[in-house]
Length: 209
Image (cartoon, rainbow, N blue to C red):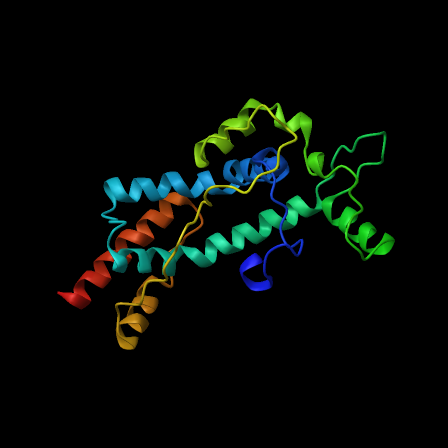
């Protein structure tokens, strides 16, 4: 955002990682409900299914076979999360995230009025949750200001994940043949998806042999 709009425009709030505790809790939910269910099977493909994560052709095939399904599962999970009822503080009625978003649009179209920016966005109950903290620590550098909740600073680095889209190694004719071969292979369970991967690997191997 700052690269596009410039610095010192309020485009980004530079705060400590504890201000991210709400999104960190969301990442915990996402990992447990969706991410981990795909991680283990893909690791199994590396061990027993011939998947080489350093081979761009293998990564292309993995994306081609499973990315649409993963995206579909992600949308299902997001829709369910947006509609789930939350226990709100101060005796408020339980509402879903979708409800709160809609109510906020009705009440105001401007940015929220934040009096205490140092504590903005901190869920103190979630911040004390060791499971959430462990999940955050696993993917982030140590926070050297971890015991000071009122210090905002520009981070020394950002976690960046660069994902390059692999090119299709098959000709249009071979891609059509692959689709015709796998169209009737079921993919409802992880066991069936492993079979789908193995069969697809065999077909693709014939194209380049």
